Amino acid sequence: MLDKTAIDWSQRASELDIESRAFIDGRFTDALSGETRPSFNPANGEKIADVACCGAEDADLAVQGARSAFEDGRWSRMAPMERKMVLVRWAELIESHLEELALLETLDVGKPISDTTAVDVPSAARTIRWSGEAIDKVYDEISPTPHDTLALIQRLPLGVVTAIVPWNFPLSTTAWKLAPALATGNSVVLKPASSTPLSALFIAKLAAEAGLPEGVLQVLPGPGGSMGKHLALHMDIDGLTFTGSTPVGQLLMQYSGQSNLKRTFLELGGKSPNIVFADANLDKAAAMAAVAVFYNGGQTCTAGTRLIVEASIQDEFIEKVIAHAQRWMPGDPLDPDTRMGPMIDRGQHETVAGYVKVGCDEGAEMAFGGGRVLQDTGGFYHEPTIFRGVNNQMQIAQEEIFGPVLSVMSFKNAEEAVRIANDSIFGLAGAVWSNNINTAHKVAAAVRVGTMGINNYFGGDITVPFGGFKQSGNGRDKSMHAFDDYTELKTTWIELD
Ligand code: NAD
Image (cartoon, rainbow, N blue to C red; front, side):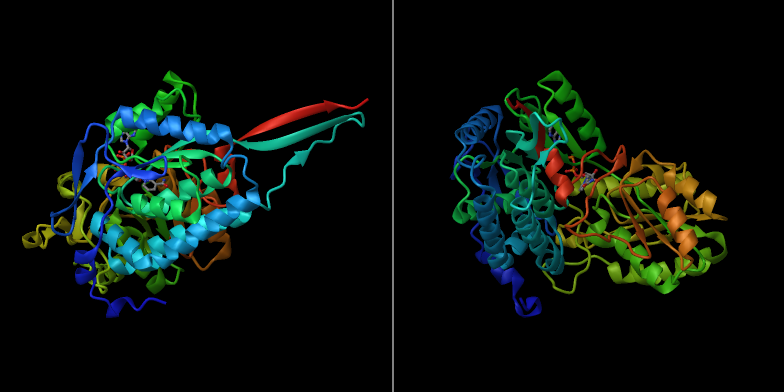
């Protein structure tokens, strides 16, 4: 177990050897154009590395390599048990490089080192190990046909898959995509978010060390609007798996239709309801209401950004949440005591500040926070912020802010709570807090989201599927259900003489 408090993280950060080139056909390489883009540390605005900026020509090369790898069967036809062993070795290597990977993620994303060491890196390793260990336990089917026929139903890999991922959980979302895609035998071309490519490049090196054959995993840092679009329109890519915003998800569906109808699975945005009844354990609910919205600076797709509280306890409950918000003041992500770091970049910092102004203009009452802080650091820090008196039609209740901003509303009965919760284009996650099993279960069943907590928030692990209803996406990450997104069902019908 790593004693993270005993480590001088700033010292370690200055000693890091950062790989910033693309990973194609088993080796690190510059973009063909020679172009690079700087990657910045959100905690101080300083440059961390000049990262290869890949374009369409690099993407074509990577797809070609991935296709050859798929067709010659070096991975796709490897026995599941052998694929398992490579994935398990890879997970072990990730664990043994926990410190470097956690640091890279903290520098690139601004996530607190206490999170990257305890959550992001271990969960990536766990995901890869779990999918690896599962894949040689999956059986195909024989259907109940007449006695003179034998019909086999097999799951086959899609072929070449592209994975396009966001900046808020770069390592975990990458693992959620790569683990099932690779376990099922696909070749993958991964495009990390332009601003956070470093951990993906690092684990690509570890994958090669673990024995993943050349060309099976390609990692291309570069801009989404050009290189990402090129991948999404590519005629030789069979599947696309995406985590990111709803507007980009909408584009990707169109690109699929305009090109080769590649299977397209999307994990998108959210505006998740967190419903608190008067009979709940209010202390626990208040502590978790703060975690739900302030964790990762609110830059979490499942963030509980709409707090819907029974009217009779509203004032008391808001006071409790404010008491917790005070413990989420942002700080240096390399300090092990920091719970919340900066926003990812200047743009996101501006977006959050813009929404805070919108909330005030719309007539919501600022109950806590609201300002930018630590500006002398050069970083993009924003206070935890709580609006009360919010109406669900307001922009701050309907739009994904992706920052530490909580909108509090009240309800008089369970029907009204459910109505407010479901009045959203999103359907990713939510929670209900009540000590009445009937209320809790009925409300949980009525809220249209992919993951619902009862008396918890952010519940779940690798054994359960994760994904959205409505405009929060289709498809599912994690668990055995994730294998469905990366496989085609094939029937072989055999007539017996
Ligand atoms: P984004 O949609 O802007 O970008 C995501 C990825 O798509 C990046 O790699 C980007 O470069 C690429 N991209 C952008 N435009 C593209 C295009 N035209 N064609 C192809 N690729 C393109 O999202 P973001 O700002 O990086 O991340 C935040 C969003 O991600 C939020 O909406 C959040 O809710 C969502 N998210 C969802 C989940 C989930 O599992 N549902 C998890 C994490 C984040």
